[in-house]
Picture 1 (tube, rainbow, N blue to C red):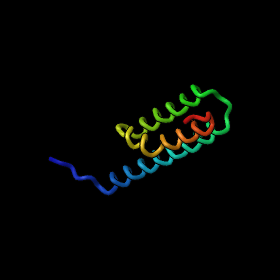
Picture 2 (cartoon, helix red, strand yellow):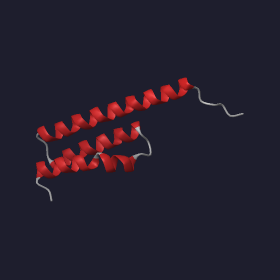
Picture 3 (spheres, helix red, strand yellow):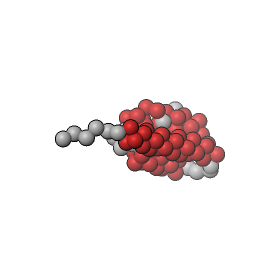
Length: 86
């Protein structure tokens, strides 16, 4: 017999999703600022981006395409500007 989700279940899921979104947003914002300001070589900067992506996928499994579409361009822009990449 199928169990219907209660409003409490749905509310908790929405709350959890909102918490994960806030966590990811803070992580991305902090990491972008860190990349812009810290002295590091390109390989270290790329490792930071990979670390953020890994954490994003822990928070939102199977959402790699969304990360690549939403956040990766912001990281690429910072890296292009900082390391004068084309």
